[in-house]
Amino acid sequence: MTSEHQQSHWDRKYEQGLPSLERPDPFFISAFSQFAEHQFPSGGVALDLAGGIGRHALWLAMRKWQVTVVDISEVAIRKLNQRALQLDLSLDLFVLDAAEYRFEPGQFDLIVLFYHVNRDLCPRIVSAMKPRGLLICKSSLRWNSNGKFAPSSTSPLERNEIPQLFPELRALYHHERPVRDRGVVEYVGRKSDAACEGSMNL
Image (cartoon, rainbow, N blue to C red):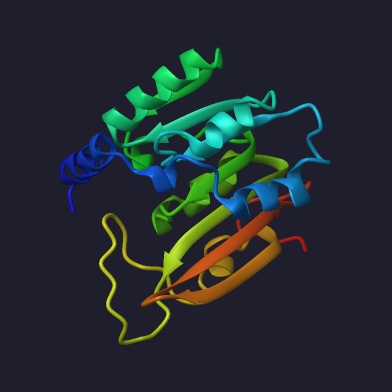
């Protein structure tokens, strides 16, 4: 699916409304409380990649985080901007395919990645994390080798693939389970103090 088709696809969905994507995912709240809250008691700098209408970005911003949101859907970003204005919150918003975003090295304390794992972006995501920065990630995956799967943007992840995509991170939490005709992976990784390209410090 081309970038233009993806944008049209998600614009239509967000115009119609996606109530399931309006509230923070319970795993995100749980992972943040367990792994990020004590480390960043005064907030930090976060990137919500493919962040949609900002269910996680708004939650973070209300807790004094400085949040950047990137999403391919102009409709989603417009709705998020309206909601942020209503709540008197400041967000940095970009209407972009995640692959087009310019990742700056060592920029973010936290990166949120829900249901948009582009394998080619993984090294750039890790590079954009500060030392001891966190990645909170959740995505669908192929559970059975013969299972049908039709994602809208990227090829499905395989079981136990996430740690291989982020070898520089220490896995603080990694859980996979079946959900209907597919699976879901939940993952929290931390970059080491002295993480460098191609190395892993556990």
